[in-house]
Length: 362
Image 1 (cartoon, rainbow, N blue to C red):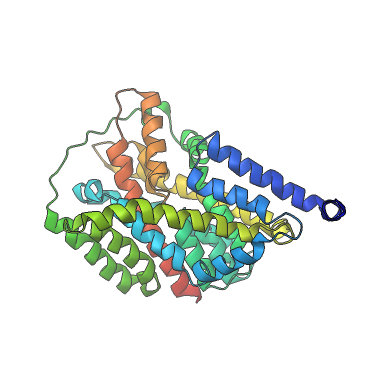
Image 2: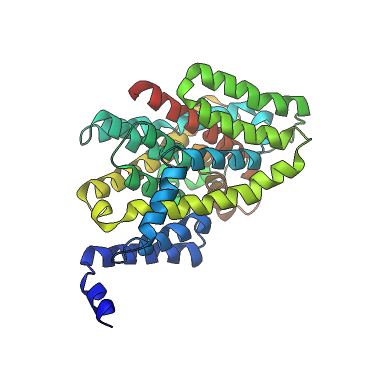
């Protein structure tokens, strides 16, 4: 009883705040079903590492050193993500790649904004939160040696999960009801198996020439897609999509929580990073929507500007958000294939953007 009493006396108010934050993440994961595979481990881990004399910290430090410090977890996860992606809609309409590029504007906008408060390497690490891609954020922040890795990881994954809350107000603010009701016909074009096999190889080579620092990221992503499309590794593809991705996601989520210890997390810098991360997501969304509206000024065949918002890398959440918004405006307006095509283009563009940040500042 005396030991329990002594432990209770060691509890600080900052730790209680982190328990509340952890509980909120668990609530969002279970009640709202917002990326539960990420938020639930992060939320529970936040409680775990903020108990007085927590015995979990040493174990998580071992996991962190084994899987995040050396970028192993994010890169392996990219194999699973690549195996999940069907580039068919994008290959059917390659113009969708433009929206993925436009939706990365928030990264470079935030880079300029963040440089007012942080040094350039920290600013680059913070800006990449706008990639809406957790693994890319970790790899870039780790490579640039930022001391704010914990806040960046938490912001990146939290905002990815909150895409259904963040994006709709921005989209509605920038579009009219008439624009949101624009119907886009989808004609399924046959994409040859050869094209699907060559695509990940060609993209890896191009990305390597444009942004050599992105080769590991884009290469692992495209390797996963090649496993999917080659047709002779179906069992490996299924393993990468399910078992491998799920296991790594669990380890990644709970290991990230190591950087959610109260003393490290509850700082003015962390709050500022969370605000800048939100700015990056909002500007990314706005960039894609505005780009689509600009194209409509010159195009006879109108584009529903909402699909531009799916150019962020939060796959497939952002594509689904746009599709559901379209259905709410018009139950017969099916934007899923268009928005998913834009979404996968954003996945590629965000990795290349991360590589460019590394090229500029390493």
